[in-house]
Length: 338
Image (cartoon, rainbow, N blue to C red; front, side):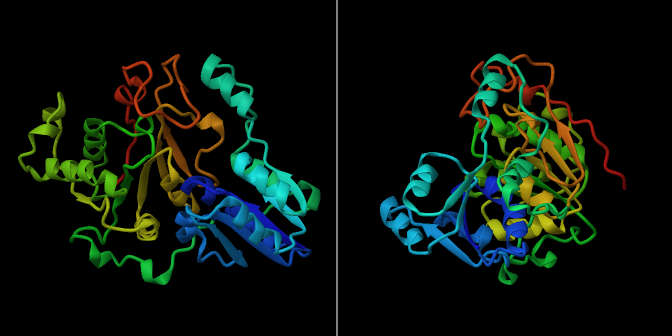
């Protein structure tokens, strides 16, 4: 049986599909597993040994042309793990039986708008696996996968001295502002960790990362001295790696870290793939959506004393209420032993 998996975004969601890829490929009746996604996400999957062929959608390629290429593969089954307009069109035009994930959008809408929680207590990975129920595929217990190309493995001597005995990664990025700690809270978190810290994120996060690094080095950056920060110990050792490494190199830093702190983003799921001890930071979204770290040890930081959470299933560019208490009033209650 030749199978096509559809998932076009984003980093975390694609990583969460890896158990489906693996369980399909190792099933006795499955001969080939193909995967269709956007070209920008190729680095996440190119080294995955369970994928026989990647089909990458170029942003300039018409969808109908892309669909025509898929149709020529003559798939026996299409597994739709995205369930949007694009994948609906692909399923319509590409011949083959289909299985589609249940997105539970109505239940998510009830939770975000009326705080009525009818969502099942089931992780999204297990809902992805439910699409294979009719194939009698037994789910393994291996969790998520992430495969780093050898060329992107980061050597520890690339980092400053003092990191070889263990360090914490703080993934400061996030597509939406309401899923990210404000700059002053990020600095507070780093001060609380009290271990060598590597900040990771994209180029868009480099300035905030540089300001956090500068704060603990005592550089003169007046814009970062928000109210209350003068009380901090300023003993953290921080290296700003934001924008300096690609996604796979950042994953390599996560793989070698002793602890990982992350917002509700893709890097949280990459950390889970490496079975890291993950400290997860939640703002406008909630773990009840079923996207918490999968099959690894994790700690949740969230402000549960608000009647406005969750305000979105994805996040916003700014707090709809204007106060951003979900992040500003968040308590960092944890202890990392020496």
